[in-house]
Length: 346
Image (cartoon, rainbow, N blue to C red; front, side):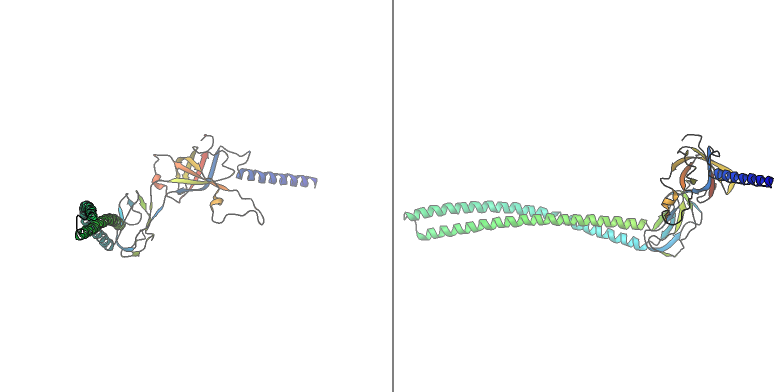
């Protein structure tokens, strides 16, 4: 019995040690720490851009097919542009009309300036006539007080003075009117200039709309499945297709217990799950500013209920080294296994 109890004790101790060792190994804790940190929670990433029209209309041409290689500027889809062509022609016609109105208004200020000069001359002439009439009236009045002239001559001099003064006031008023006309013409010309600028902007907008009927590849890449169909009516923002540029990288989600020595610049080995015989090399480019759970839609709340500790993972971006073969096999979304050598300082 004593022997059996000793054997059971030994077995229990062995099982406990094995369990502890298994946990330490799984968590890569001492003495199982390694200069290499590895994770299979990693995926190839790329910029997948969804292409959509800015305008509404019927699709007149689909110039590409599923998974086709395209170049920057290549036409992918063309919308029916007849309406937008007519809008551009209409905007151009409006612009020409505004320019014609502006050109015809150029002579009006010149005419108004000529009237102002004529009005100024009239004012000067009226002033001379008034001054002469005042001098003549004073002379006749002086002679009348001495009995050297008749009352009729005095009345005639005073009447001439009043007419001269009225003529002067009229000439001054006409000059003011001419000056106001000139100011009005200048304001009207500014209005016409603004109308021309607005018409030019309308032409530019109509030109942009017409250009937007052609959906072009924003950069070199490979298309996904084409969702556009000939004759289909689409609105602004309708998803037609996706383009994937050739640039690739890896997002590897390492456990928080693995990132202690990981630094940017450290070398990494990437093994593609779809082709385990293909190995790629790269370097750590940057570490995420927070764990993946912090970016999730439903963030965990560990302050309520029972608590079970779960190792958090930190996304790390890995850049592939240039000039490697078989990079076309690195498709966004594929799973990879990443191993980082922490013995090389970043």
